[in-house]
Length: 383
Ligand code: PMP
Image 1 (tube, rainbow, N blue to C red):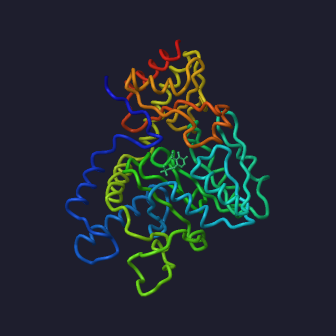
Image 2 (spheres, rainbow, N blue to C red; image 1 turned 90 degrees about the vertical axis):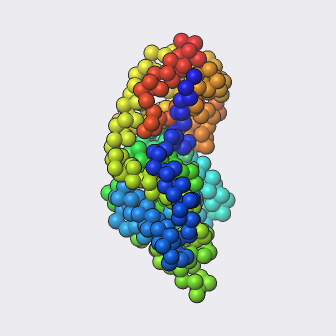
Image 3 (cartoon, rainbow, N blue to C red; image 1 turned 135 degrees about the horizontal axis):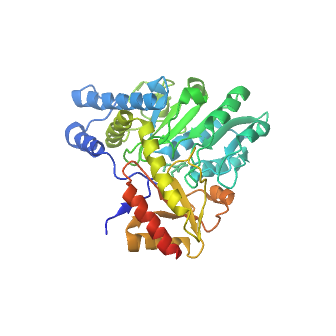
């Protein structure tokens, strides 16, 4: 029984071979830190780090690599923004389907006097962009939104939300966990103040990597939540004010940086649209076959416009955890069941507390794997 990996929304697998090759090269041939030495291998590390920043900027339509902060993942990037920006008395807007990477820091901040409201979403997880304007208060200092839902797969109209934010002077932060590498994102066009991306999902880099891209204005006012050694301005005991050092303290994850740099090169060489088209075709195939299967409910949009390859199912005749277990046990298909760290999304979709079985596709997913998955779903549902 061949193993079929359909959990790319958690982390993508497999990765382009160049990713592991770059990481092995770092571990066996380079080994040096960055910003801390001038010998050749340290220069190699510095150059690779710069190439990564430049590649990410090219991919996301950002003009300044110094404002591309390398993080240890998307959760860190979002925490850096929420905790570094919001203060007691501030109000924040979020969508009704946010991940706990946003909701947990926000709930912590709420205990300190930050307030927030959730922009409503329909039963397919689509945000009502028209509601945003009326929800902005005089003290609204931030709007944070997942670009694509890790539960329903719905991609929100970030342009419409960005336009309102720009007009009303509210900094707009996009959590691109499920769209980076899957969907075109243009920092400048969307009018973003911050864009947080994981390196290990659609970008196909290693786990423990990510990036936070900041606008100049926002970066200037954002407080770093972690300070320490940067390898620069070592005569000073205060954090350097310049970018990217202001937000990058400590020795970074260099094997991860090498891997992610190779991954971003791969994504740029293919073009994001190639990945989007592949995943849309796979999703179309999955959904069209799913239509004729009784006793399974789709939690998310049927239409293919503005959705990524994340498909959540609620089995009506079998417990969802049991269904996910059988998918692996009997068919070798790896999925994720439960609430996917996003209880709010399940409340909006009507799948709380039972959760869903989530199938998520990637660049290496094949049509045969989709067909095998739908056949297994039909058998498990008892169709
Ligand atoms: N936001 C969303 C929408 C996600 O799907 C995820 C990952 N499941 C995260 C944030 C957190 O990303 P990471 O695991 O890279 O910290």
